[in-house]
Length: 68
Ligand SMILES: [Zn+2]
Image (cartoon, rainbow, N blue to C red; front, side, top):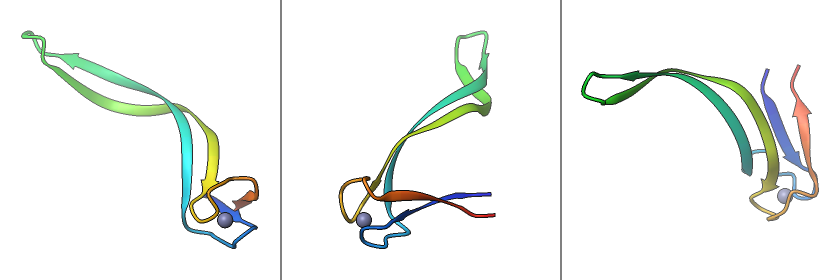
């Protein structure tokens, strides 16, 4: 299921600026020499802070569409 957005002011369905915060857990694998490789990143929390319509420039009339 995907979250979609719609701006009821201009009808925009496709272009939004989304500010979101994600918490990611990952396996940090250091070599003996100290070189880091980050493996198995997994998003453990995700929060959408704001959604702004690219056409209107504000998010006052952006609504969330839940696609069943
Ligand atoms: Zn708009």
